[in-house]
Amino acid sequence: PFKGDLILTNEKVFLLTNDEIKMPNIIGWSLRDVNKLAYILNLNLKVEGSGYVKKQSIKEGEIVNSSDELIVILD
View 1 (cartoon, rainbow, N blue to C red):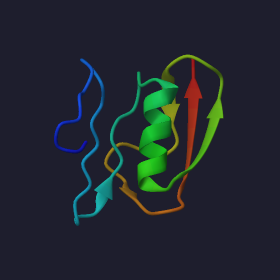
View 2: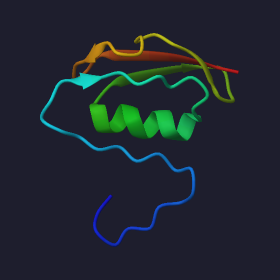
View 3: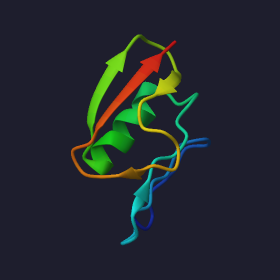
């Protein structure tokens, strides 16, 4: 977010650094939040189902590279 931006309660905020990017645990996230994360990290996102994330193809803690494919299964 930029200085002065308003953030909604429970809205996820993503901060990029110069360090390696590690995949967060996105179980329970909405598709909206996953789309934001995929856009910021330049991931190729594939979605199956609707609802909230119940499974993610890139495991929590794995190093994420630009153009990696992230498959999420929603329920």
